[in-house]
Length: 196
Image: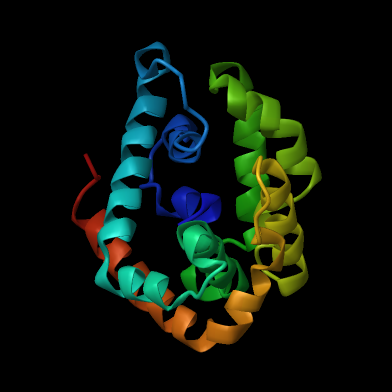
């Protein structure tokens, strides 16, 4: 699961920092987590628990094996982005009752309000995060093209991420079935209690 899913899977909490911690999980390389706010630490722990659940899920593992070279090496990243695509595209079914735009606006407001508490890498990404509409971009194939191209540019060596939409088009029905099963299982884990 990518950023949108981590934010959506964050359990309800009076503190927006818990939800933001679920986003921070991809921005803490080299950060001493003990220096972060305790609610951010809890959210990062939840982010990592979600990642472990996704990585171990049999349907996800099987789908990764179906991704052919030269994309196979990037299959975990591509699947995470594709799963966020299905979540965003079908937000009326998978969302929290608000529109996707309202949910994303809430996230952007929380990020702006608590920017000083966030890890430096996320602080640095904040201007692009809002300006480039990363979370909303997942909803369409055109948006996915932009997301994948941007991801490809951030990788130091040559990679096929900018052409990753070809993988989605080749396996879209199967990927969507995988997401449906995975999402149901992740919600069941979340509803049984917060990941630790």
